[in-house]
Image (cartoon, rainbow, N blue to C red):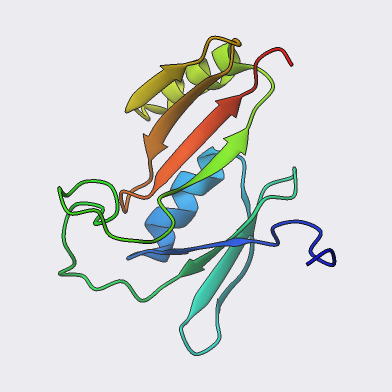
Length: 133
């Protein structure tokens, strides 16, 4: 469909709004609204325009691992969100200062590099630094 212009938001199911807000605030996201609606949902947005809807109904007794990424059986679904960055060394330094570990780094022959972190609910976030075109 040619009418689609961009991704409007990503939805992530989480357990605790306060813990989630604190984590994403450290990444530069700003709280917009919530909880609202029947699910309920809270919304945070980065100044770059990346918008995340946090669905606040995860079970407290849910598995401690990410069922899309951490178990041998491969379930269908979205596995991560990728945030494009301009300075990988700066982002890595900021993550280290915040005590947020990088779980994996991938370097491609064209100079692209992407690395991954996990939020408090084990959702995967990729920081993507493009290489030379």
